[in-house]
Every structure is written in structure tokens, then in C-alpha cells.
Image (cartoon, rainbow, N blue to C red; front, side, top):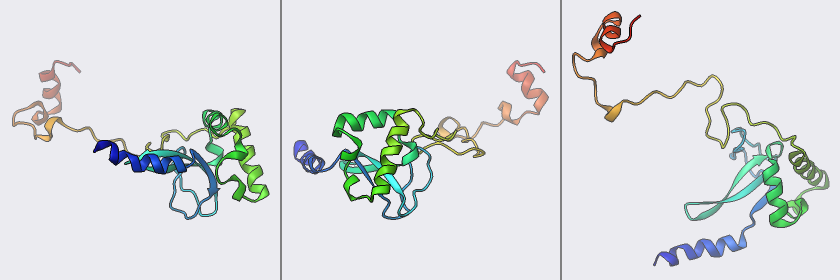
Length: 160
């Protein structure tokens, strides 16, 4: 039965393209590199990924295409003008896509903002995550957390 569950994805994936360029259809997508929104009508580059058994694109703004991605596109589809969606773009947009891939190969891609990357980082100035206690249990009465600062240091063996 397990192989039957995977079959629909394989069939769907065979019809999908590993990469796509297009104008964003809405303002709901986010660049996975910069973690910033992609505006409706903005050129974007997508890499196909498997999420929950379905194919979905992870989008990037063109300046954040990496040299590795550019090399993978060349290896996978042949050249940048063969990326799915390229033929649907206007001539200037096609030139912008080619220029973005050329910049990526030359190492001129936008650096990923500090604290960002893969869309999961906290931005500059964001509060650090709180440390979680073991098992979420409160400290027992009389633990070093209940002692005054000078007494707590003496109890822990660290001198001031």
C-alpha cells in the first residue's frame, strides 16, 4: 500500500519542472534567502521541492540566486533560457533573468542578510530565544534560584 501512496507524487513530479521563473501572482510569497516578501508582479525564481508528498516551489528574488543554483540549472535543463516560464516573460524580463544568473555565476549574488538564511533566521535586533528548563518543572524550594546573589555564587562554588 505504501507504494500506491507515493505513486501520485511521482506522476505529478514527472510533469513538474525542477525550476521556474515567473512574475509573482500575488504578494504572499517570501524569498527563502532574504526572508522578505516578493511583491505581486516581481520576477522570482523557484526550485521544486517535495513538501508533504506534493511538489511546491521555494521562491527567491533574482538577486539571491546562488552560483550553485545556476550550475544546477545548467546541468538540469541545459541553459537559463530553458527554465520553465522563461518563454512567458517579456524580452526585458528575460534579459533580467539571464543577468541574474550571470551575476550568480560571477559571484555577485546579493549576500544573505545576517541572521537570515533559508527563511528561518531572526532579524537583527530580534530577541534571543528563551532557554527552556528541563522538563518545564519549577525549581524546588531552597534551590540556588531562591538564594540572594552573593549566597547563590558561594553555593555554586564560583567566587566573586
